[in-house]
Length: 309
Image 1 (cartoon, one colour):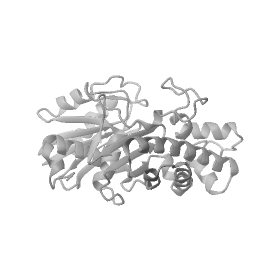
Image 2: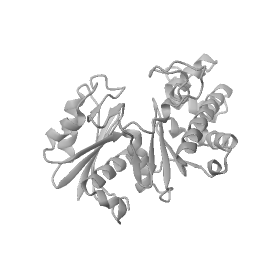
Image 3: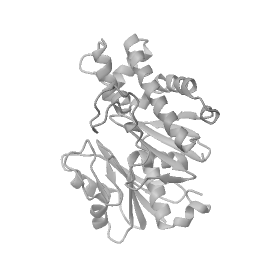
């Protein structure tokens, strides 16, 4: 019962055939390119579709899971794009399931992550150009009515903060995303390397103990901790897994984040929370998309010794 997993990002598309044991049988990755729809077609042609029983898609959002449409912020030509219908036409006869990319990242970590011993409740966070999230409860991704549950990037962390592109004030994304961190650091005196004012350069300076760079990461850690603990208080979360480009800074982000969580946690059940980096790196979303497809093809698998059992 091999399924096709598709990971739609703002800069790259990836796909893989995945068996029930979680082995990526074939994996292909392509840059989005000038024509994303043509890239999607090429991707499916390259990975091959023989013997598949279903398709799972994790996409950058916003998504509208009931409608099967996506509007990735970094793909302007895809606004309310009928992704499920398009894939269904390219792969006739196969069921297609859609969720957000961060939700798939969380589900992939729950299923195949090496450091999470099958948590009852897991929060996955992608900290990159934006900030996204997904929640897994008892092995089932909690998607919500529209498919956007777990969107932690739009929890308010500063009521007097910046206006977010979503229209609200002080969202986590206005503090913790890579561009937001860089913008704040530059406004506070960071002398970025010529031609490289990005989060990677900011992390390098933080590791070199450049004060403003360290403050940028501390500010992000404090905001992330507030959002994480808010979510944990609502859902009684066991584990938090962090991925994405900014999270590639490793302990430069994770150490102050763990310290901020410990400092801000009040109730006892919040103090047991663990924070870890992704163990699946770029493939977490593919594993999660595969899990969606496997359970859609055989819903009782999550209650048996199947891919999620």
